[in-house]
Image (cartoon, rainbow, N blue to C red; front, side, top):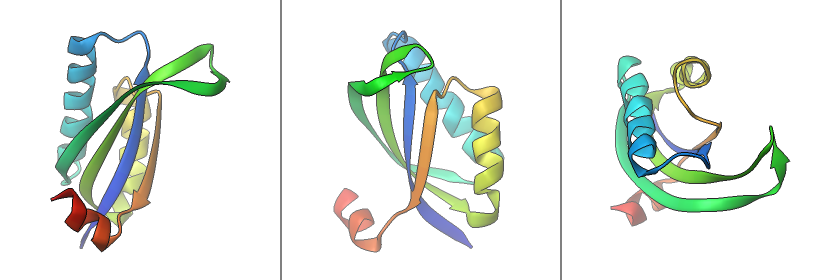
Length: 103
């Protein structure tokens, strides 16, 4: 059974708008390759980090609501690190109330 997750993705600050769009599309393709689906995408924008991470001072934050089987989340994380330009990612199970507010 698929579960609704809220995924926070951070992309490198060096990306321009076109490269960021391509990276988001690549994440969607990796998700669909595992049988998941993208429900919504919200671009938060460029934010500075509290401290430098891997010589990066900022990143582009994107929140994606995704549907994916729980057993495939770890595989999705591995595919993100190997096949995409995602700097960091984090997933939490979305609350039903939050999903209703997004719609």
